[in-house]
Amino acid sequence: MIPVTKIFKSLLLAFVLPLFVYAGDVPDAKELTHISNDMYAANNKNYLLADALRDDFIKSGEAFSYTYALGTLTINNKPLPEPYNTQYVERMKTLLERTGGVNTVFSMNSNKLSVADLTNPQGSYSNYTIAKNKAEALQRTRCSEELDVVLNEMYADGLIQDLQNMHFVWKGDDLRVNGKKLKGATAEKYNARLNAIDGLRSGKGAYRFSRATKG
Image 1: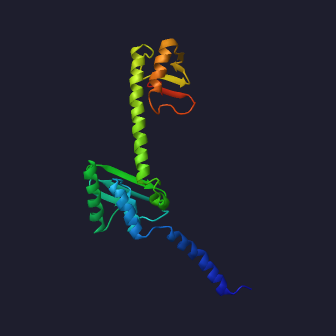
Image 2 (image 1 turned 90 degrees about the vertical axis):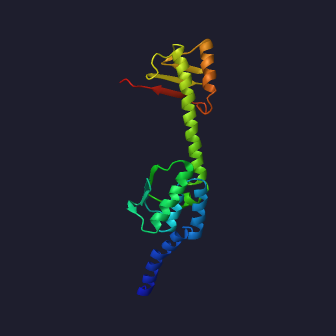
């Protein structure tokens, strides 16, 4: 028979060891402050996650949410106790003042705080990823604006009768607008115009675009 003391020790280790391993994944307060300061300097509002993790308002691996609205901050739907509330709000106000968004309202929620994403230079909360997402969003906006110019030209040329109800498929040099294949000089013109929109089409697959307001 296994002694009771050995069973107790085994059970204790089974529960306690994972806690030590898990806790070891969380950076210490000094490192979290450093991460927060780097993100803050880059105008990345996710610095708040590093501060809240450091101050134990959110926990690694657990669900969290925060909302900032006109000088009011809640974390997990609760206001922070003083002096934290004033410190957090004033720091966020300073960031928003220098980025021109004093009246900004924003929030975040997740079913799990990933410390790896917070500490990884290319993690989902990082300066790199925030900048990358902004750049991609700007490129999508630019593509959309340039495509609108081309569609207006198609409308002026009589290829489209209704800009709000149309579709086209562009594959290779084959361009079909509302099911009709463009030919000759018209096809050459619009292939060149679409090819000039950087990032509109990637790879060898077909690019499809449609608008519909009618049932």
